[in-house]
Image (cartoon, rainbow, N blue to C red; front, top):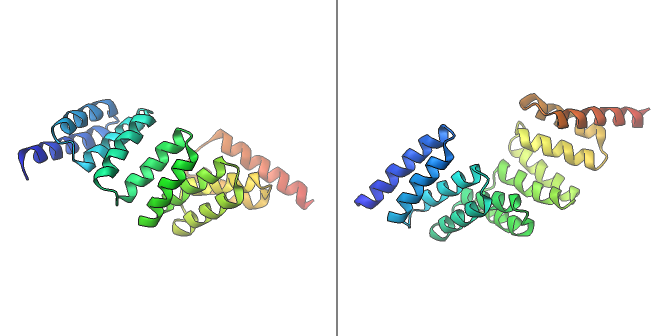
Length: 194
């Protein structure tokens, strides 16, 4: 390992420590300095993208993760990150392409959730449900998969079916919106059942 690589690895370790303290701006700045010296470090570009995304700079994050992918195109996490950033930017079709690459490399519950969110955002609730079910098959306790499955079933007017997923999601995170959807699901399910 030459001194440039050692310096970049040190910067990456420092950035990770700063991430743990939610000091994303500082992490980004350290990584930017390191990347000027060693612009071919895929891991540093990936972390830089995550620092920028944590500051809601999704365009910059997408550019940095693209640079990482140009250096290491087989990294499933980076394809997942790219899909996430593109979803945040509203570029659904490009996000789907990135998420699908990630799924081909290494399917995970989170990647299935992202893919389902892309379908949900387009109003394609049947396809969204399928992806959320794949996520739940992989990880039945995944809070986001449960939340999105509940919201999808609610959107499909399958109110009774939505209840257990919304209940499980709310056991992990408190959300007034989800609580209202859960209450509405219960009320409508009771009306339907008479």
